[in-house]
Image (cartoon, rainbow, N blue to C red; front, side, top):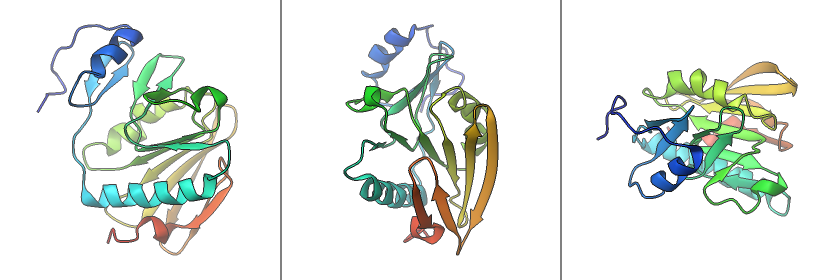
Length: 188
């Protein structure tokens, strides 16, 4: 396993994309520095991600929006960084044929784990907020039925909502409402 403190050469964004495409593991690119991704795939996280992805894909079928999985990076243009979310959605024409990364997400989902939660709530969310197209950021817990949703109703202003078992969530960025318990089908 690669240590988070391992030294990597400085890359330009293009050099990073070329280098990372040849790697067996995934790496994020933050402000010119390479950062290894934690390689812990909890069954609960995989199931929750699959459930939410399936619901989003079904809802967005025949629309301009496309759902992207954990293998597609999000580029934050301001800092020219690349991060891997668990799920993302974009309806932007520039992202429609993307294979490796998108630059205009309207929705980003992170499934929390003990080793990523602080990063996902802090520094990673700060990077994502640089994307002017981002309208919602969803954090999915894996230790209980619980989702946190950050919404941007106006530029630079974020609102926070928290949801638990039995509640209905509305993702305004993609005009989609669903019961939170559907995300956790077969998780607990």
